[in-house]
Image (cartoon, rainbow, N blue to C red; front, side):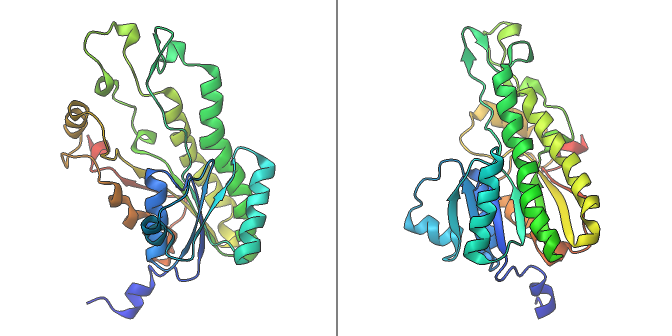
Length: 276
């Protein structure tokens, strides 16, 4: 049986957690994990839609809110900080989760995702959301945490920050080599960059009570084609992709006092894929 001291390690009662990309697949699960531990999730998204009653109760826990902001815009990030402080008077946790969703779609007869034809505008957009946005949010919210001498930042990276994408996973029969889809270069660059940002911030604010860690999840099973799922599963020692809820425990660990002596680290949760 868990004793009171053990359970209190994961207690986030009253702590305010800002989650960027908060209405995405993992962002909503991050909010649910925080709300379930007594925290107050603030889900930030570019174009937040209305949550139904069931989702509101499950994800927001009755106290959380959804806010709209473009995290690549410095002024909007500063305004977002003001909104959070005006509503709750504090910020305790920042989860840098926002990222462009890489889509491998043919464009103009040339495969969109391939390095040789990857649009510069897409490069700029992906890095703006994934890295610039994380920097701006960390600067604004992290400085407030440092002022209060307490806080946690969690950067959501990926197993592909540790290993290169296996482009064989994305191959399609009947296409020429120069038309084969691949995982876009920006995904690896952004996720690797987030680990670098994690280490920098962890040491920068270490003496001001702000802990900064990264979480590197593997692929999540959603509606991918069965042949893709089978190919990816063959590369994972546990033989399967993750369920959407399987990162909630890791996120809660990093956000809570259970990881109080942990900073500058990268928690890898990917079924063992990077072991091979």
